[in-house]
Length: 505
Image (cartoon, rainbow, N blue to C red; front, side, top):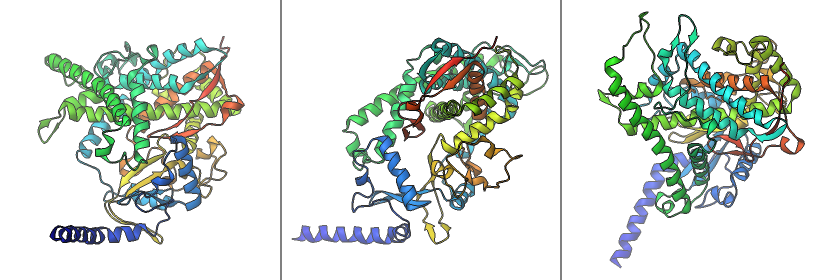
């Protein structure tokens, strides 16, 4: 009897504690429209058994039905708010106070700013051009055939991002503008050549991890770390993580040894007194926090993030751009003519950053693609203060998902939103003045994507390279894409386009 009384007492205390702690938060969240929320299970009960693409379709239906702000109850104790409301997005993304930046954020931001400094973007362009030529050579093998561009572009983007880590900045004579680039290498100096070795275990592991994270998010039982460790999915995750971490660890250790052995020969300034800039990985290896060097584990965390964001997101954007060019041949022809006028007829000539910056219509085409197919369709922010827009208040410590995919298709923001029209982003011809937070494929505000200039250069480089060499087309049966939004937006069955070599003689 005494034990029963004690148990009831503990339960009562826990209930009172929960009500006092979460009453206000739950009361505020209750005013936000919810997607099919059930007791205990929350919204997940309506998602059980659905594939990734079916879940994405369900989220689209929820957005259309519930409006620009709605919530998904992931458990009795956890709700996630989805928003495509411009004012709310601006409040969340523009505030320095609202966002939880996490430990070490300002240090990482500083390293990235130096790694993406404008003065070294030219060297990135040369790496992109080099690997673009390899991509074109591979595509020539499939003349007048239909192929999946997603797998091909993924390998190209992987080679490019690996090359960024170890680009030999001393190999470019900035004064004579003469390039002595000898081929891209991996983060630690070991050559990847993913485009020549299409069975990349790393890329397969990235895809596996993305799928697992997405599916686990919406599974009531697998969100429990205790229960999850007994599942088949957990074993798949561990195998994929081993591939990712083994690769990153090996190149970090290798590069650290190289830097240590070569440190006596490294000068801080060149003969002209110009400070040499370092690759991203070298910056991490030579940086400290509170006087202490970063451990290999610290560096691996940043490199893993950089590798994923640098190749998977750009792969998505490039493929959807090529898809739109194939779907709209008149726009493809305009891009081709601009490339021909700006870059000339010599397909082997190095394309510089100056050349890429002059591809104005191509940039508009990429921007319009990202409006309809943002590489990251949803990205979350944990807010540290209440956000009130109109009659709704999002309580602090809530995860807010910026729904870039829904935002770009909102007819209240973009007229005729499903029409593919690159000129809607042309400031000279389009008089529509949208809130800058209405277009956020790279996020916005103090935590925007710091690599967006690099990404735009990469996208313009490879798309221009492909369109100058090939005509693209898409069959009716492949014109409709079935989408899945894991960490990155991608088509379930790839992007299948027909390639035909242009007559450039």
